[in-house]
Image 1 (spheres, rainbow, N blue to C red):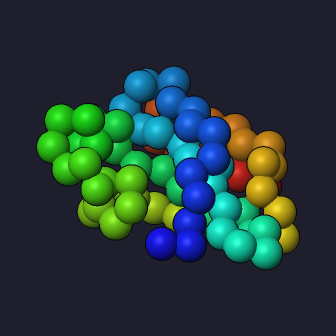
Image 2 (cartoon, helix red, strand yellow; image 1 turned 120 degrees about the vertical axis):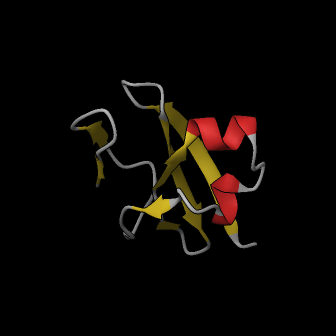
Image 3 (cartoon, rainbow, N blue to C red; image 1 turned 90 degrees about the vertical axis):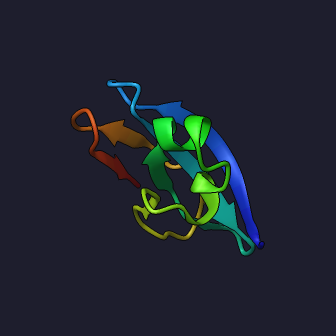
Length: 76
């Protein structure tokens, strides 16, 4: 994979995890996935699991991120 995991930030409900990751260039590709699914079942949840959702893609990485609720995160 050409994807690199960045800082990991748990959501306020402790059910979701934000990964402020990136790919070469660097291009920021933040994503979230279910923390429960990752720890208790699918060790590949962070890579291509059914709960993984990409949030945005930008020119850089290490951008500000905010949780707007228990499962909603906005990056960039």
